[in-house]
Image 1 (cartoon, one colour):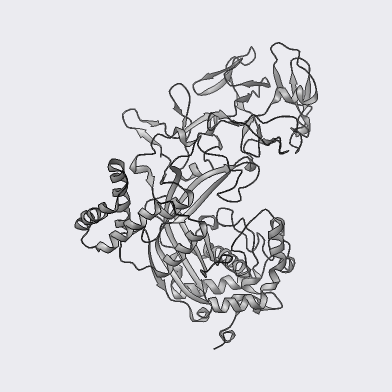
Image 2 (image 1 turned 30 degrees about the vertical axis):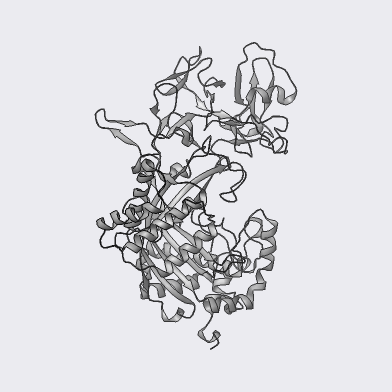
Length: 601
């Protein structure tokens, strides 16, 4: 990562490619050894048209309204000079610095603060260039995504109705007495005014301070309407988790787009349109004929079908996350391995006899490709989806691409007996009426919510926890996708996918799909059900109907069901392990305990 300045940029540190669209994505602050910076927007990316960095996923492109995705540039060395070459741009932020020796608060590059070999040092009479300035611990964050330096001068003066009388005010910050709490942290001006930071983090502490609309990651400011909506800026510690919530969207690369011929068609189509413009219907036959000669093993009808689907995508068809999930569900269930070079390979595993009335299919996915794109970020509160109105932009103007990464791995897909699942919902579905009420009263929306979704979601959590015990993967490295029927949808779905993926070109090592062998799956499911029947917090946990955020969980806590946030697709809510394993007084309540005689002939 490079520090973006008017002079020649220099390297300030390194981050992984996957972090560049998640933890340390655009708009986030990153602490390095000598500098704290904020990651710049995509306007300053200069490699967005280089094919080696371009990723394509047709379904995700249609959903987000872009033509392709661009990978963050990976740091590399200049072989001639053996030094790192700058890649991802960043700017210094916060620009308000603090000297722990002389206790002064100064702006970067002002007063006694000067840059020396990549470090801001103090050249006052006391420090004489021996002390390094540290970035301010505090920043001001706006609900609309803006961020600015903590206004120490305003806090001491205007914030308490006073006026500074010093021509060249010097601010100092220190602890009163031997205490180290916020109430004892004093900011003092050379004019004599001083104030502690007590209550600075309260909701209305900056009700009289207007947001400047500062967007340092884009290098500009915009008019902010948050104050008119009575949404005030909040003080936060700069590395606090609520300062930055990246919003990402993921989709599997599924057939036909995962095949080698589909990739070739997409690349040829892009190259053709750069020179000649859009492909007309009269050009289709010639385009197909040329490709057919190079790929004689592929039928002409297949090539033409893929090309026609791509051309329909250019007509801005309406894609939704629902249609993506339904396409993935169909592809996983119907795919055959005709192209061994495809980014997607799978085979059907045998279901253990004890569970073949509950589980309809188990599919081992040997090769899986997941594309994840960053669409924006929020501050103070987590985004409710990729269309959240409070999403902060990652570029000044809309571009035809978004930053993204491609990860490869493996997975296990399980499809459940829909007929038996319907009978379970009919018998026990009313139990989740209070959860439905709580969901309606929350700010979450889930178009798939139903008692069936609660079962599928909980099963995936318990399955991942058991896999981590048996396979050696950490639960944080395994993710879930829940395929449950959408509200008022014609497409019926009842399956879960758990998968692990990595940015490495080889993907993972096969430990996950090894568990799809009959003997392993039998042991895994049996152990999962037995382990899920008991929690260290029982009987409180199993009897609870108001656990989790906004009471959106029943019997589900960190001791038995919850996963790391990176693994769960829906905020660790809408869970109840009793739906899988039953209750102490009624094992039949758990769907996995239903017997074969529950199915009527």
